[in-house]
Length: 168
Image 1: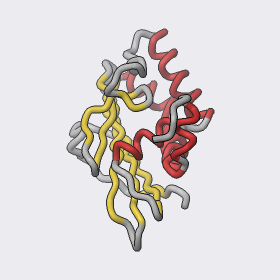
Image 2: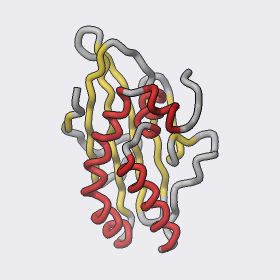
Image 3: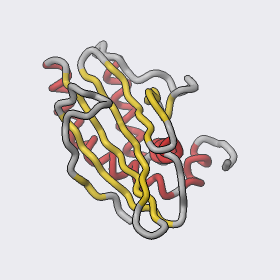
Image 4: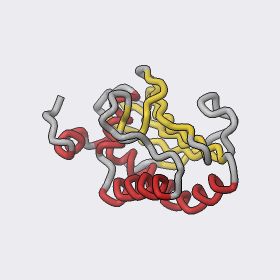
């Protein structure tokens, strides 16, 4: 099934001052997972262009003196994004930089029949002119990345092949 965009309202408790939000959902059948598993699959299975965009963002942020996401060897990261909260139903990733605050909220809930709905909400709080400019440049790609990340949730084997790990 393809991810679909759904309405999201602000404020959100994970980023109360957010001034932009986007949400996509994916209906998944015959497999159960926690929010952390869904987030891990989504970020590890990112397509080549999505990975390239995230790497480009980190390089540009470092060059112009903005806070780049931390290196992914840290244990509380998924991909290169710090994990702020996680339980079976909801995992929150994000960071607070000088120019903007950013959150990705991955949640799971019961779907129809034996299905499960995996949701991914992106929240942004732009803090200054640099944040508004950076976000304006990234927004077209960001709105395309989230559905691509959700599609990666459907392929658990790919996540472990990309990182050279064994399947769980």
